[in-house]
Length: 156
Image (tube, rainbow, N blue to C red; front, top):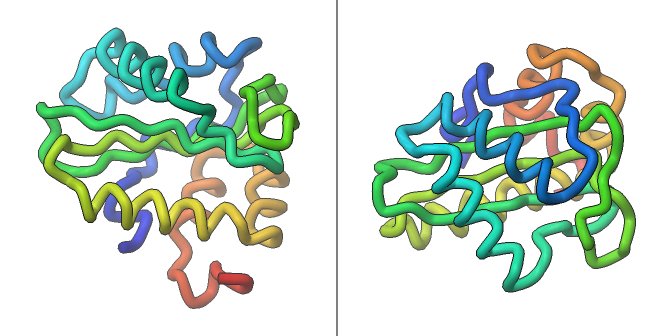
């Protein structure tokens, strides 16, 4: 699965402003409303419920909040580079500055897991993460995220 299948260029935010985990999830939900058929309140509530099960902050400044929705017909993604890192209750207690939001259909068991695995693998690539942190415009971030796996993934 290529990221270009789940994220579009208008699903990339270069300098999202948020001061807390809750505010970050609210901002992501509002941005996600633009790219899919769901309301921001529904997205926010689902993300909040998922976070109550355990933080989706993976460590090293990266989080992959995600949720499933009956109304969706495909997986949607949104990427945000934060203007300032926020505490996300990550496993390593480090603040988060790179966030990949994933919204999936209720029925997308395998596709949802494939998308999560693909994003997780991509964001474990230290060279790629360094490029993302060093890029301050949405077009550049989108280009980095959607590079073909063979050139983007040095440490897969």
